Amino acid sequence: MFIEDFRHYLQDVDEITVEPQSITLRHVNSPDTIKISKYQDLIRLQVNGKGHVPLLIGVQRVEFTVEEDFLTIDVTFTCGIEKERTIFVQKTTK
Image 1 (tube, rainbow, N blue to C red):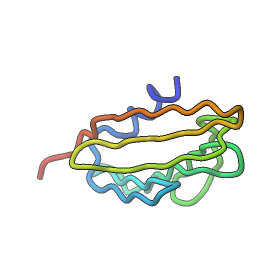
Image 2 (image 1 turned 180 degrees about the horizontal axis):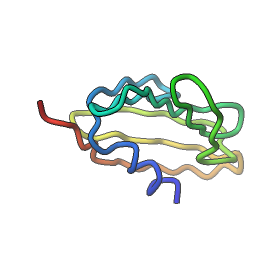
Image 3 (image 1 turned 30 degrees about the horizontal axis):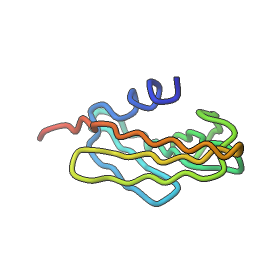
């Protein structure tokens, strides 16, 4: 469910900024900045630096990386399970 929700935020991306434990997105038709990051033992969503919407709980570690048009999310859960997923980032063309 997390990946399906996450894909929604990766559509029509104008700008993407990646740090190891967070990703910041800007969309061409929106003035809002969306940040998805690890906070304590979860991955949360914030809009314009405000809010606290949990997207995935029980997270020990997360790492975001971008190569060309693909974003990879590498998650280690508190129970020790590791998951990795690579998602295509649909960028807007100007």
